[in-house]
Length: 630
Image (tube, rainbow, N blue to C red; front, side):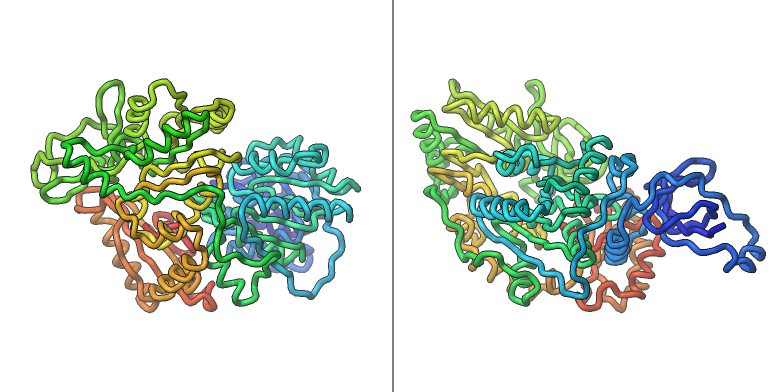
């Protein structure tokens, strides 16, 4: 009989390790079935030892060991995968059980198939990690070359994309001519599909597997190269506990397996640029200082157009005179137009003209957005979904001078229908589109309809896989004022991705044309952007010059403040900064407070701090390297 230590694979089970006994032979990485409080649960074997060696301990124990119900499948994951999972769990101060639950898709657990062992590789050597910073066109051309070279050597390639939409787009580009050797993996993959891919990885035919980050669980057999594309996308960070960064996990896994790892994007992260300078990432091609474009760029100063409108006693417009003229010229020659709005709704924010207070949700305190619904107007909260009637006046000072700020997609849509009543108009935002299939159908319909307009929010971008005559940004000003240290990089990346899609004209409407982010993005000036971004982050001690630890607590404000102040005292040696989320204003309202720590990268994970964080109540949410600090 053996004493077996297992990790439960269930998000509802908070136990880190449990001990059972088994008369059957088991090994680390085996998938077994155990019983927890009368319920069956899948678990991974961590270790085992003979019961004879622990005879005295077992006799003295007040509890008797339960038996492992059955061995579901031997060697479900490799020792290398398990080692990388332990390392990423330690980095994010997360339980190994919830970490493994996040890393292993249900389809893989249900497939009951063992990944074949990786082909032998030289051990004891430093894993080389590469980076490709170039346009989509050039980057995918290089990927095709790498895939061909790997196929000649009977080796498989795994390409990771951040979202399902990106997977579909890349599949369309790289799958041409080799469709029999291409496999798609996502959260929608079935256990039958996973079982088939696992079996093929043990065969002689090389595969090109294109998938979301869960496809990292398929590193085995003939896989030799992993390409992690669009590495500058926050979608690689799991947005719920345990908040794992799949880019970092891919590195840990590459270190353990000695596979070739390649990061790629048109605009890579600032962190990656600095890693190139340190020799941690090797460029496969020379890093460009400027992104070229076939389109003519127009940085439109809306302040000047607004002054002219005021003189003529006209209301402000979403579509300015210059952009409207370019749209007209494009439509006349059967060209296509894509317009992007920063926010959905009619007006992204409403403020009091006297005291400056923002109209907020009466339920959660988040700023509300004005929407047009069935010929009337309602304020909607995009955090909790609450709808309410427009207020008669400011809740703080009573003033009736409520002013709508910003330009939403609904307002833009209304103007487009007035300006171009005969032009086919397609809309893609989360108010009008409820599924990926509907979004793709609308974008496909747009591409097949000449002389049409496509309007959407940022969610539209992954669906734009083909060039468009005119790409216009209706307004980016609401993004420029978001108080988050990554917003500049996020905005620069988004603008350049759209600029790549424009074949004739690229327009940005803004009231702040002197903004360095906008001027650098409109000209594709990478070197200038990275230089300014690096200087700012170094001055403020933001990543990569620190590891950020964000601890959040939500609830009644008075209770939250009590807990936050007590914890900040315990963390005082790490100089905690305390701040509130928008909407946290009084002791009788719900809200969220945060503690932010900045840790020297070489010191993380710091054992004593990690120990404190792991012992916190589940009421506290701990996020290492958060996507944002709001």
